[in-house]
Image 1 (cartoon, rainbow, N blue to C red):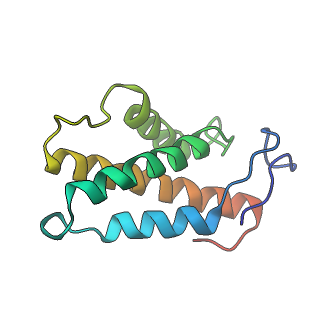
Image 2: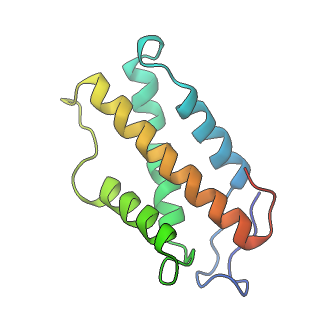
Length: 122
């Protein structure tokens, strides 16, 4: 389990990032193979991974002073906020790509969070 925020490195209060849970979920998603994964499995993982990414985007991970973090932050926001989230009409390949992109960004932000909080990296 991650630290409860409110430490010197963060600005949010009463938010806990589950480093192990996010790490495990993103591992599962990134291990999915298009030809071997059902649409139902992708649809089931989608809200969880989007929730993880959203929670990480709510943190101050240094995006104001770090160009690399800022790029990841903007990519994450674009995935969540700009109407690109798959719908029931989205082909399975589109869901697969979106899910992997979301998990990848979440995973990288999780690594940054863990490093900043002094936790073991995922």
